[in-house]
Image (cartoon, rainbow, N blue to C red; front, top):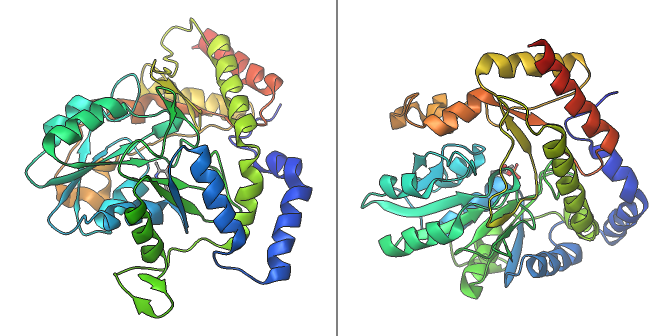
Length: 372
Ligand SMILES: *Cc1c(COP(=O)(O)O)cnc(C)c1O
């Protein structure tokens, strides 16, 4: 049996007619940038995330940048972000001319460890970016309390966590502002690049709208500095259709995670992902932690030999990436993140994964441990 890491084709086939009709409508109306589908999507997406405003942008990375830019992050500021995240979280900071300051992750949630965040605060700290990594919300109450006490901003990177919940509340409106990615492989994926920024602050939302459209609120009148971060109407059309299905797709991911947890329980030296008591995890990724790198690498090769594709998230932590060498970090600075990068493996996870496929992955992992 073949088990891909993600299967975008199966999802496409399940909505093919609906999505083609919507794209066709955009083509017939020749309204390619922003437009009625983007406007509709913004309203529906905001409602779904229990937040007042959503502004469609051109990618999650551009969303990360827009959030910090609109909030006034600039050269000389420091912004605390997890060492354990995708690099785009850091680009949001560097594009503002500010300095990323890394904090290690918590050994159970794999998200920002509030104690490490507090220890990283300096007089220059302007903001904290809480990333809801792998689909599980960060510990927002503790991070809010720390940010409030030090008078610094808290924002969210929700690129991997559409409709996930923290203490029963959807992510995206739990801080000053948030960004989402609709990269095709994300839990809600466009047919190309797209993203969004959300906020409960109407004035900030107006600023987001200007920033994404050359700093203007009306054509050729540029009130603030900006960029071209607009969402395409075709992506708005695709996302509007897909938004009707994300509840079901998320439940399918959670079901697959449950099957993995049942199929792999009691395996010695295998740590299953922990769903924290405060969260509803949406399993963008399902990560196992093995006892050491050698076992991890051998398991990955073994699974590949049995037609099972896996991933590593992330093999090189941000604080030791060559592009950040000038920041002066080294191996040993972020032990929890480093351990995860060395011993973690991401199993196939997508809404249309079948019970048979999950069962086959579990059986193959068990057969590996009988031999090793
Ligand atoms: C994917 C991702 C982004 C960037 O999104 P793009 O749409 O690919 O630019 C940002 N942050 C995290 C945590 C991500 O996983």
